[in-house]
Image (tube, rainbow, N blue to C red; front, top):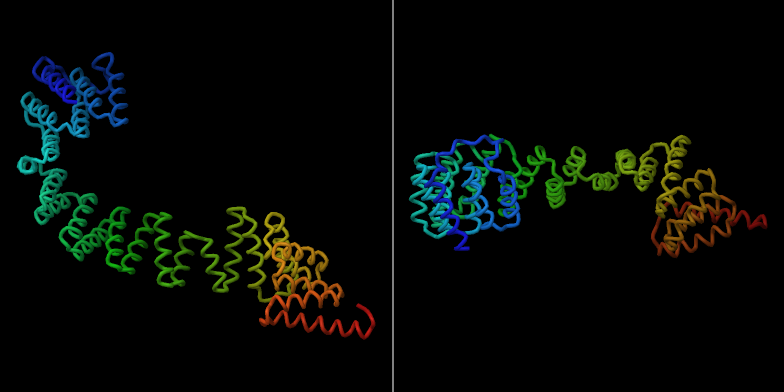
Length: 430
């Protein structure tokens, strides 16, 4: 590496000391020499592969033949990546001697001094540079050097000067972190970010930083308000997840539901909230919308069930027909036992087609043979067909599966089957 660096220095010395300095400026479109494009590709390839010393060598050759500033800058940047700091200093000095002072070259020299641990020299050069340029990045460089020396109060002043130039959020982020972490001025850091957000909006970087500060302080409300503002401007799924987690942690289901209704960040969760809140009309509409959007028959089935559950008049033939058709469509693709049983029970209870209803209920029982609700549906189906003895046999199994739990509908079925058995016994039939 030292031999390569020495070669680079010699090449540049020839360039800056000879006739190359007299070459006219080149237009961006015109190639300075035939192999320029090829060398540029080699340089970019080496850079991409992390072979920075090799990339620097190619850029030195390019700059020697085509003295463009971009080649010069790439040369220095790759030397810095390769940590060849002495070579940066050597070449920076040669450029200054040949062409005079250049702020950008001076910046490379300061970075090299920092890399070598020569902080006093770096600080002296950085202070002189910022006095000349008043540039934002140069203020930041001075701040970084003071921070390396752990002089955080002084570093903060230079960051504040940099931020005052154009309210750059990258500078603001450094400023806030230094306040919060290094100077333990946590409230000031939060107030600074809050002020910036009110004046300039809730950018992803700044709002996430603010939310992180609130999280560190266990300020749940602060986190929530920050994420809500961020979601308004950046509706990102990860931000939505954070909002949902916070509302869930607070057990604030009302505001969680409002957020989900306005954002549709998690329609599955919204559907569950509707169901838990027994808002069946909303659940039905959302289920149908999800079916149209995603084509999942489970949503169509749920939409049908909640349409029926939410209806005021459950005897309306149009309603029943509509719900049955939806369920028949759903169970063609989704053999969910809940849907099968619900469809079967509707066909049985409303005397639409008890035999077909029994077939659907049996398909549900194949998957969950001990379900008392599915067994009750089957018993009711046999009752509707007049097979009361068979209905009673299934009902006894249902009662055992219930384990003594009470259910009004089951009691109603049990009484009806008992009356049927008594009537058939008196007639001498089944």
